Image 1 (cartoon, rainbow, N blue to C red):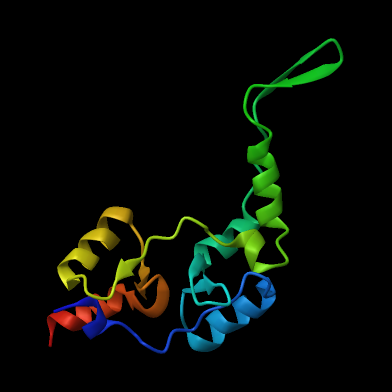
Image 2 (tube, rainbow, N blue to C red):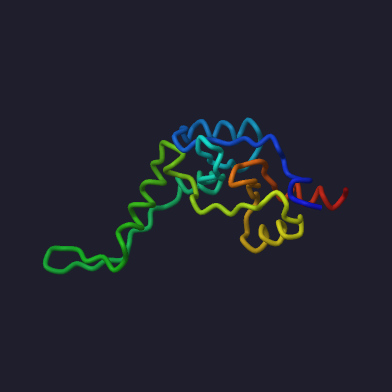
Length: 148
């Protein structure tokens, strides 16, 4: 059995410029836990999950630093705190989405998809054909395929 045989073809996706509040509403209304982010050509450029949204409530982790001569020397990159702050106050999808998205091809086997999802500890994976979004597979889809 292949990914295209079990994937959900009617994929709910969002654009990077969409509002975070709109994504929250979609997740709640559709009872789903994540959506792919696509560009105008339907290329997957990110994913927004409940985990990304929960991040907004997380405690800010200040990089380790020491003070010398009335100045601060950071022992870690200040880019880390910059990324944290941006995600915590996100207004647009592009500020909160995960950009390193794991995808599968529609002709990969269900076993390959299940292995990827387990190894990467992800709950859903966008399915692509010719680098365009054509479906999505959740853990539930995998389990459902075992009863077919």
